[in-house]
Amino acid sequence: MTLLSTQSSDSVKTMAPKAHPLVLVHGLRNAHRWTDAFLRKCVEIWGSDRVFVVHLNRSEHLWSQPYEEGRAHFAGVLHQGAGCDTVERQYEYLRRKLELFEAHAGLTRPFDVIAHSMGGLVLRRYVRDHPEDVAAAVTLGTPYQGAPMARDFLWFGWMIGAGRAFHDLTPRFVREFVRQHPWPSRVPLYFVRGIHRGVSWGVGGELFIGTLYHFALRRPSDGLVPADNALCPDAQHLADLPGHNHLHLVSDPKVAELCASVLR
Image (cartoon, rainbow, N blue to C red):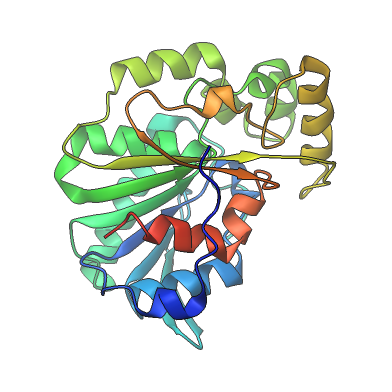
């Protein structure tokens, strides 16, 4: 088992400059969002004006956020309506946002990608049509074998306006999707799993419910995705992170450092 790097900030500063800019892709409903600490670490490592955050919704609003370390660029509106559609529709949002970044914010291709949860499946769909655009990628807590909770709580997904996304996260759908969308071997892909211990609330109680759900099944998980379901058949296993739940994967800046260690 690979553990989270304890790399210090001083060691991050000694990293060679990144050859490619960084694109960040969120997961289901954008409920678990990149924290300022995570984003600041990305800007520190990749540089000012070289970090691009996609929100997977219809909005084509472009905006920037200044940090002490530099500036990051965003496309779309920050709300939980992002990431509620099918993988195919979210792929179209991703493709359009990248075009906007390229035209108006200085994004160059190829780029590195860090994708969280369902965002890893959206990225896989993108790479099928645009393999030359991605230099390398890391996915965090992506359910490559599907998420059983999405199947068993599909009714709840429809209640909150994310039924199409829940459907595309069910094990039956995802396994067939991954089979039909093999990752190109020439593009390095790494995956990270959280291994949650204890009880957490999450954003709206989802991690509390998920922890109880997976405890009843006696399956280790990050609170939402069983560890076995986060195994990717065509990627390199970068790390298991004990003590990290699904939300920690996008909130802990040390996870950004870990991704940076392989995104060269």
